Length: 242
Image (cartoon, rainbow, N blue to C red; front, side, top):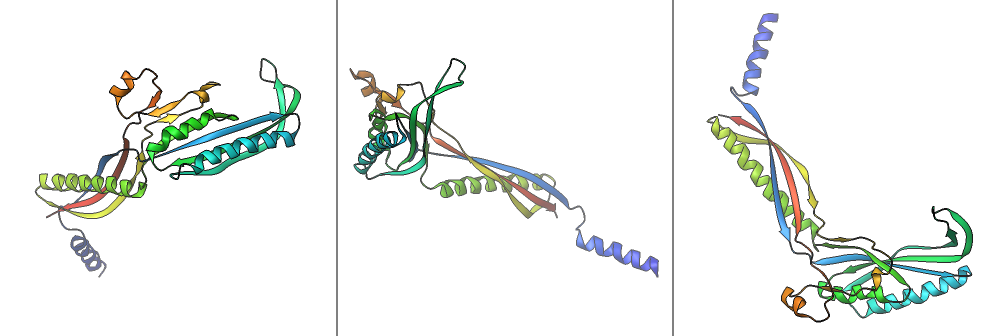
């Protein structure tokens, strides 16, 4: 009786797993490029005074000036990222605090520029009195999900083709069992980090024509962001069978 059960179990296993079936695991990768559509950056404001109230007042004046500049640019969105008021200290050559020297107020305003044609005007906010610098300039696409999905679909198509070709090499066909997303990454075509003191008082522009730039008697600093690359990968588990 026991022997019959074992034989039956063996026959059932042959039915469940077709003869000569072979699992295939392949990885598909793809990359799409998009021209930058929006820009983001931070405006850093700082003020120092004898009292905390005076420091706050000076900071508020600069904040109002920045917000007025933004109000004249409908495509620019502003929000407060950081704010703080505290004692200001003098430091020695090693960077250690020595004594208190009044108070300091700080604020970081995050800007989203939805029309890149407005970027030169936005970057000139670095010339507003009280603005210490502009940092964190980076570019992006407006619809990340659409770009990501396009890259993933291309990666999936490549993985399916790889699996089908491998199965065909063995004279079989591929039946797909499982698809796993490997992820998607967006490149950083340009990132402006905090520069030396005084750098915020430079004027900036976005390149429209390199020829016009070279011919200009008073050229501005030009920002030319590269295309944004969206890389995606997909892993497929398939079975090669008759």
